[in-house]
View 1 (cartoon, rainbow, N blue to C red):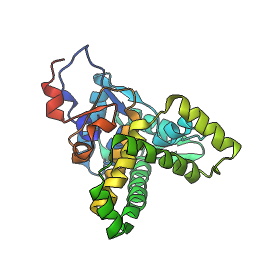
View 2: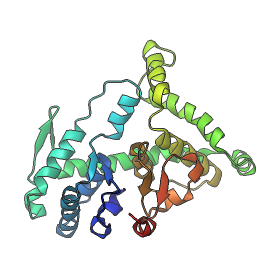
View 3: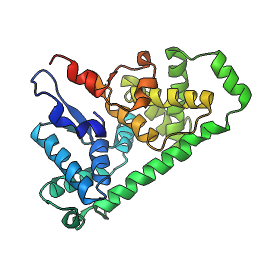
Length: 262
């Protein structure tokens, strides 16, 4: 479930036949949007409902998921900080009081504003990265339109995405660490929905020439948590534009999910 669906938990019938799952990213987004007393009340209630409904929370960030996928050891203190802030602010009725919350991890002090800035920085970074598709030539766009990609093509180009991940982390191609990372990844191929989505999104953007939406990077990142789930519930249009046969998870709008018989 993405962040908007988490705000509607009370509308989901209780059932022992389904397990509701959300992520650290979703929790962080709820907290980072606490910019007014009204939003604080709404989002604090959503966090409380997550605990009341016993929603399973994947306490991993995109960074830690990537680290584990490639056999790296990169600590991310944002994860325990997000959890600690969530636990504290649920006890506090007003934003004015909650803004005084401070937790320390890895030598850094975290507050609500820390997570808000971090969330904004992630969006800025993703927009900057994804905007690279705007430089695609007219000829290349026409070629992409004339040759629609298939799942096999996406998975081929996803291998390039994986190499770029490691390059971004400063790991030289064919170095001992690179070979260990590729070998480890190849055993289970985690993050496949996330990587294939990033690849498909990039190719679609290159073809259309449309600039990336500010939240597109976060929408793609949510799929990093979807490898072992059956349904991903969201009303965001980005998921409806994706080819369903590229992914192991099925995308459902909120109303479609509610109409299912639990």
